[in-house]
Length: 133
Image 1: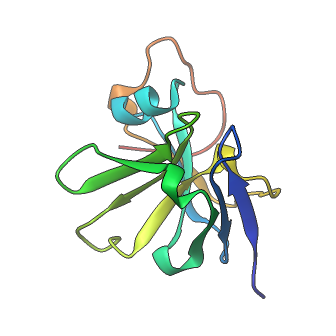
Image 2: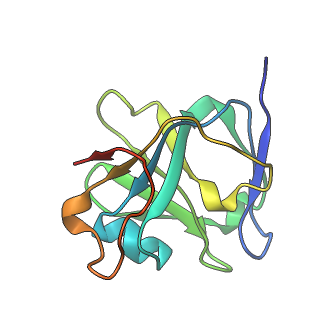
């Protein structure tokens, strides 16, 4: 069964479609994700790059190279964090979608917390997701 999920940025300048169900759902507490989202953590799900289709606003999609191998993409109009990906390793063919920007309802299965060593000191995790560093 093919799943189609739609998403967009805050201002609607960028819209996208994902033709597979996001996997590897994680809540990342690293300082880059916290700063990029302006929140205690960022929630992402990953899909094969070939399953992400920008349907509107490719010209509004900017890329920030946050490290030698990681690129973060956001809307240059409203600043919404949309995607991140790595150019090396086993997951270089995948892209991670900021789940808060999905417009289609999505209920993840397995979830986990990442990079807890960098967790915001003011946030206490109160869910039952596994923690992984």
